[in-house]
Image 1: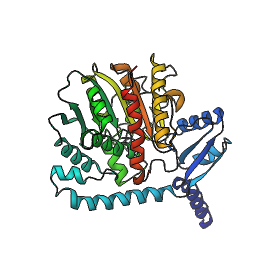
Image 2 (image 1 turned 180 degrees about the vertical axis):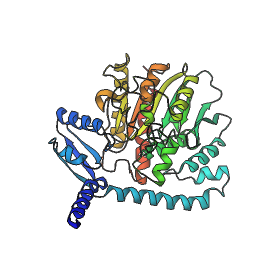
Image 3 (image 1 turned 90 degrees about the horizontal axis):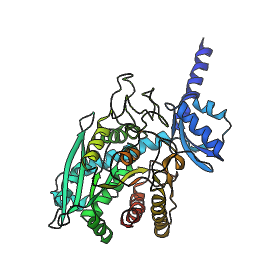
Image 4 (image 1 turned 120 degrees about the horizontal axis):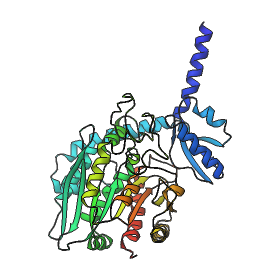
Length: 422
């Protein structure tokens, strides 16, 4: 009897030990990439691909339970990239908790103006800190630059979803550039990059910012998924979805907001049956408060909207529609030209290589995304998913010292995307 218990225990340990490991999978060709992608789709509750598999690429992934053995049988080469990614996640969360405690003692004793001046944008911040910064930076409005802070929705856990509008008041009837950040909870650098963009437009405005504001009113959603974001800061660093409850299976929380939009909803690159899946697309289109908030906000500005950027990490990619089909927009040549200008400028100034193309072929098929929905339901002609640093060395756990270089990549790219004529 003791021997049977020991064997069962060893099997249990072997099955779940792999959860702590991060693996690097080698996609040597298109066949390997397809095998990897299909395996993920069929096992999306137990396989977490950190990036899209393409031919001649390396993909980071986590496996739960017996799925590693099943994947091993497919014959695709892989190796251990990190022997204990769980420990790295735990250290990341612990570090943020300590930093937040230290900042609380300091931040909330400051006036709005002093808070902005002392806010370290080269650190990752909590939702509450982000909100305080947004409220404070609004006070930086001047006679030439108008800044408006507003609430556009509320999450399942009753956190407000905010928008910041930046404009040169004297210049009326401009087109709108909409920037959205933090739709996926674990992509912290998206939120950090967004705050640095806000700073560049309002506090440390440079000539590029002035040129953009001469051409556009800038609308920014700095943190679309605050519930998921806070969950990554306190519980599960690898969490991707929001934290909404699922009626079909209450034990499994969350929906992938970026698969919840009403554009070919539930058709490709998603799981619409299993709420435990990382790519669960919800009980129906716009079932989530966060997707409704972005939808309603975009509709309110749809006739003036010209450029939309959804900021993500990681993989260093500049992507345009569509994700739900291989077809490309009518202005694809112009989009590809702008993407090339942006990627060349980033490489010239930063030495970083970004790749571009339409979502479906450059990364993976995915229905229900924000980029596709904006492209098909507003007047916006230039719609982008910008995947920030890096290409897999750190993945989602990008060190704080790389926040500024990651932001500079985006800022240099945005200059090309926003200021070049058709």
